[in-house]
Amino acid sequence: MSWFYKGKKVESIEDMPKGVFGFVYLITHVVTGKMYIGKKQLMTNRTLPPLKGERKKRKVTKEGSWKTYYGSQAEMKQLVKESESLEEFDRRILRYCFTKKELTYYETKELFCRGVIEADNSYLNDNIQGRFFRRDFINKE
Image 1 (cartoon, helix red, strand yellow):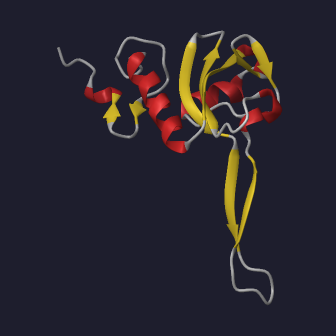
Image 2: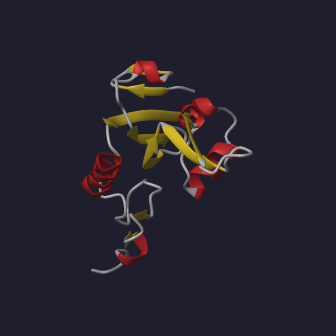
């Protein structure tokens, strides 16, 4: 199953604007209507031990797992595991971001604007930045 941005299929980094750091996404389980908003970086950085005879650690950057990514939230992972087909999921890129700070800002903005932690909605997100939790806003009226 591919990612989509404004109706167009995104299958490689070449399909994205130059210099993209990551993206904010919305994944919908079409069968249940459950949704999840998150962010994903395109590249991963790893520090490896130095080669024999060398002193400096090595830094390696490679393309991350964004093509096969379906979110890190436990309930979303369970839905993916139990699904008969990945075609049950609609994966949309909401916005491309060019820095880590921009990525975090626009994910947080999307979460607040959509009211994902408010009690009666179909979003699987249960917190925003580990600071604002759904449990703190349920039955407070």
